[in-house]
Length: 255
Image 1 (spheres, rainbow, N blue to C red):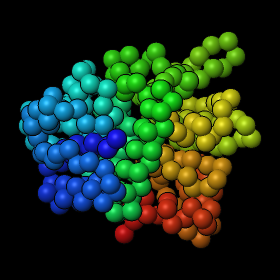
Image 2: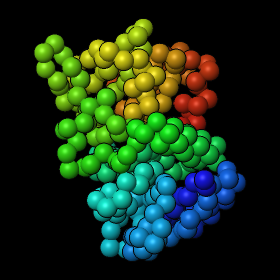
Image 3: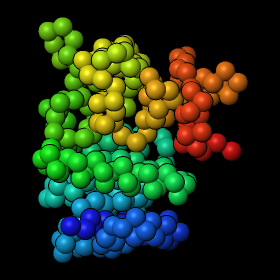
């Protein structure tokens, strides 16, 4: 069965890139629109399997507001595309429970990998019956790492005899610890009884691997020491392997 992808993008250059790559990868290009009204019209006519949507679009609603309206009626996964990298935009976007983020400017390779990995996750979860709808923005408190959804704004970590609520945006980095994983936030460190590879599947695309034992939040990176191969996250540091170095630098879009 063909995989139908709707593109909502108001910049012609990026819209063309998205269209060409969607078709090149063998997916069905459902339509391309630059505004919220036409996007809703296309969805009502034929709901796609995935939406690639810019946050800044034309029309009455921006991409984040439109995502909220869509998820009230249709369980359609959304990948946000944006040139905005501030924390406020990320927090707003996170409430809409996107399946992934793609930050402009991006390379063709980044775009291809994002689409392929997203479709692969959706196909896998559909086959196992796990992904039934996006995480509802109205009640993220009720969702945990063990929920049926890939990503959410918050999750709960069990500490002794209670569950502590942690915002995904507050996670600085993950550190593998055998069959466990250490979750580092500004306030404290949590030990989670799951492997880092399992938790990584539930994190948005702004978390990248700097080393086989470390996964960092790109938004929290303050510097990269190219001589000592270290990624700095404020006062904290994590190692950067030679194998991960190119991918890390490519993701940071350095000049």
